[in-house]
Length: 562
Ligand SMILES: [Zn+2]
Image (cartoon, rainbow, N blue to C red; front, side):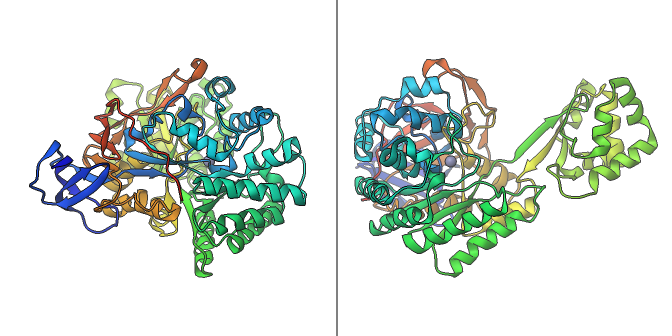
């Protein structure tokens, strides 16, 4: 007699091995058996025709604040997420002395774009240490499992006060920081996160504290993580702003890797048009570190960055002087020029050729998002390239003829990043790259929230674009992060593992449009995002979400590395 049996699904067990039809039996929050199961259970769910996979492990979140007012960590569980890691990018709310609370709030306000009034009203501050933070979390209901990192900024603020955002640390301050990291690891943190991103400031305009660390500090704190024989180092550094910053980042990498002897998650890799070779260089850098024997990883996001515009008022094409000159003309004159054959030839050439810019210059990646007139709705979703071929005209003619026929009110869409499929396939397939950079819980006003990165992966990249097998995608979203972080009893469907299970319909799974809600403390707005084709999210053997709705239980646990 089991607690729960999932009957007749196709099992993607997280290892990357071929999927197979079978049942999963669960008791006491653990997987008891997988295969054909004839025993009975308190509850049997028919999952015929559905995929059964380990729960998604979202390893890059900023839920440090949100969990205090939203124990469900919405909208993550709607997308199959069953465990989250928070405390990334050097930012945590612990350790913290009472006099430093406002300083830590200030880093979250600016770097992670969370409203100050919500943080002030929503964080209960029942802790000063990492251990007390985890204990406070444990007193609350939790929908998901939660793992933490020790954040460099909080540790530095604790040891140095406001001097942490002004100067390098002295010997006794570094020694105190070592102690704080050691205590955090002993309390069960899954590693240490640091941040040298030159664009990361506090709300008061001062650089975040970790940016002032010298190599001695980085070395010694990384070494403490190594001493604990568990966890990893997460290093955020942003884009390469200057040669000095490139050199500095290189030194931090070298120092961390040499000193910690634990895995490192660094680079955020994204294909972008203006720096077409950057992703390749980043991938090479990670691979080189692995060749040298280090457990080094990069991460990437699954979201494509879409830009929508009309030829009535866009500045999207301003990087191309031929367009910019026309877009600044009065509307009537602009339309006249759009009709002129010679102008069209010049525009066509200037659009497709020239040095790399943020705009893709590819007609196959510009599409009709929304037609202004009913008779053109049939064209929605088609690329300009397709349109041109079906109309036997040049792409620039296809674009401008449609726009002019709709008084320039046609909405077009292009892809600003992760749009080159060949590049994306290489990035996603690299064994050194983790999938998912959701930043869930942060950047709350973004109309393109990150909760559903796994849904995007399974729907768009795997089903629609066939960029990798479903088995491989599931492995990258579950077993890989579990292994690197050392969450050893999750990320696989195997006997004895924790029963975190994600049940979805591979043919139906998809994102629904983001929605603006005003549910943050003090009524501040944020965006949420629902999914479809995900009947069950199961955490520690309990059904947490059914068809996108919370069942009312809170089966999540605080995870500890030791
Ligand atoms: Zn982050």
